[in-house]
Length: 428
Figure 1 (cartoon, rainbow, N blue to C red):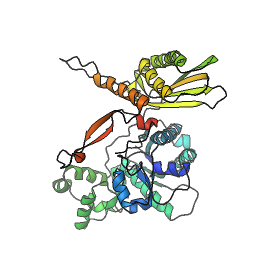
Figure 2 (tube, rainbow, N blue to C red):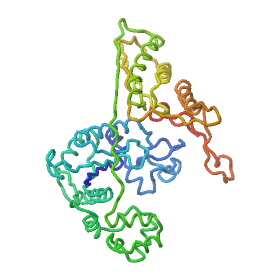
Figure 3 (tube, helix red, strand yellow):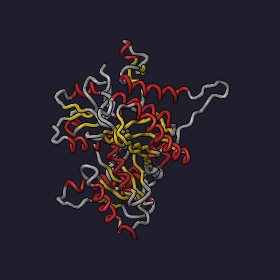
Figure 4 (cartoon, one colour):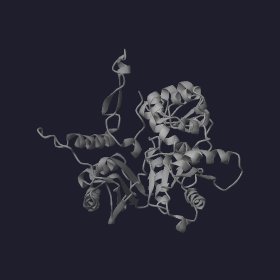
């Protein structure tokens, strides 16, 4: 298996820098210091002062009170990376990538490139073409590496980034591990420092105490000794050092967007007359999704207005669904909360059908009837209509905390609203 690994470190921050240049040196992305959220990304200068991803915003403010704190735009980050992954499908269908900006793997992609030489040239040429294709879609070039395993390709990308710092060239630098089995990969990894292994810092420090500074030195240890000292996680890292990474490539399903539209003659004034048309469009699209056993995870409603700029409403759904009544209800709530303000000449509805439709596991002896799923939809509709901070849910923090405010925190009960861009996070 040959893999091309691409990594855009700090992609959310890169996107913000492209949208609002220039950014100051100290930037924390996640919200305002008084918001209850966590840090999504930060600038290198903030990281040097101790700010970390996942850190509470208040803690980050204590470390860098002079930093600029920016709100997140999860929908924009997700859309940008989804567009990049769709562009990669022009080269190979074997693509793995995480599109949730809150996930640690966001901004990383694996491509299966076995047997593509006749189509795109040798592996370095293919990598150059891929990065050129993505240049208009994502800010900044990626780190790129080619290897026989996931870990090998990731290490090769780190090496290529180091080489790029010492060369002045417009051409992307791609490190390529020779094709072969575990022995070939292990030989490439052997002279590299152990800090490249995905092990806990404590484990790496212990290896250095034992005088093991190179991956090859660690790989030469008997597996039984590594298991006895570090347990099963240490054995997994030992396998990586020996060029054995059994994690398969998990290709993503391409985003399947379906759309329907209707022209309104004469233009329709007000919101209520749109309900019938919206329900008809949603029913048509949901029939197609149901035939595939798929469900929509997001819905987008576009309105062309008379003598006014077009309007677009995007809504993340609580769960993948192909139920026109529920989709219509949420989108109508969005329209009531933010009316178009002019007669509507054309209405179009777009659904994505990437995920399988969600099912409900019902109890054998109790008639549950999928109450939780219906509750999620109701909460989302209420949050759209009245504000996401009207209905709250307690989240347990530390049951042993002395003060009540340390035991739990309040959060909005509705799901999927941050990605839809509805409202700011609730202040404590």
